[in-house]
Image (cartoon, rainbow, N blue to C red):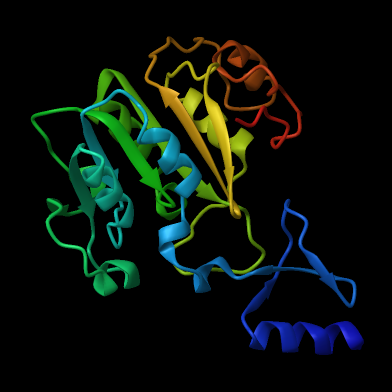
Length: 240
């Protein structure tokens, strides 16, 4: 009874009660977190952003750029930035950032004559109806020795509009490797209720005996970070 009342009160003041891999503050025995939807989008991916602005690259493709906060940071650091976005989200509509070139379309249908040194996709993959096509498109648009940064939110208990999938670092790495990439040297950066994976594009040939069932992870273990294997903890990774 007390917990039910506490849940309602905490939810009313903007605290989201949910299962999460990140321990929250305990009130009346309930683990809570500040609802990230009520926060400033500027904070999303900030730790990964600081890392990527130090990469020796020239061009950045910001996929699902939303309010363009990240794109502006890249531009201010001297990078040539292009955004791809639907332009219909609450973040895009509220944005006051100008001067960043943007193409408004579905990323899967985006066409470009040039490739980019960094593909930046922050809080985007969980919105995709077809994750495989999404990763394939990233590979298509990244330079041969370019970088990719994908940021995922922590899994959440409630249904959120637009979030079609829930992710863990291990599951993200598994999906990327299945696209034919060697990400054994990938780095993981922990942010606020989010995880970013950053890797340099390195194409690989997948085994021809994959069954998309039990045992497959062992078959591609050489493409994954060493801590990930069949039935391992998907959060048991080496953080930067």
